[in-house]
Length: 238
Image (cartoon, rainbow, N blue to C red; front, side, top):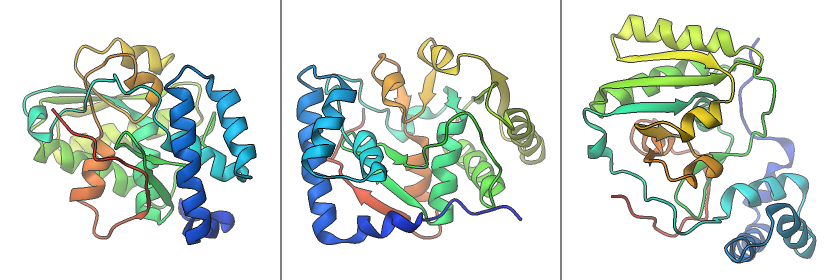
């Protein structure tokens, strides 16, 4: 039986008011250091040690902080009509699986929704996988997107199977999207001349036009709100 991408046993710490307040102070400190040129590794260790954060809290810390205030603002939803999308497949999918499964999500200082699943190198289908793909198809239709291309990292396990599911869903629903596996997905997204869908800060900081599709789906299409830690500062759209 497929597992749900839900809460980890240690996630109860995130709902403790004192611990959450401490984590918010740590996020503010890390952002301050990153925006002044400190390396992420050294700054995260410094801040994590100062606030005595667990490993999972440190992972949340990295995802919540904001390094580059000069990054392009996200596009407004209405700006997607008639546009093409380049989708960071696993980045989008795992965030939506987490939201559907009741796991912890972060709304970071830059306004992006991010999971703290910490999935690298391997991917397994979850109970929420098919629903997550269908939600993306629904969003693409509602937003009037001309075409969407999902990229899944070829070296990651099950990348071919998930690409097949996306293509099968597109065929069944008539939504203009397709998926492929590829090497060096980050490089492809950075070179995309259309709208990039990702919450990966490294890609966003490269100067691409972008949209947080996971965030839009969470705010507009989910039947109930996710388990959310909000560190955002009211980021605007253009």
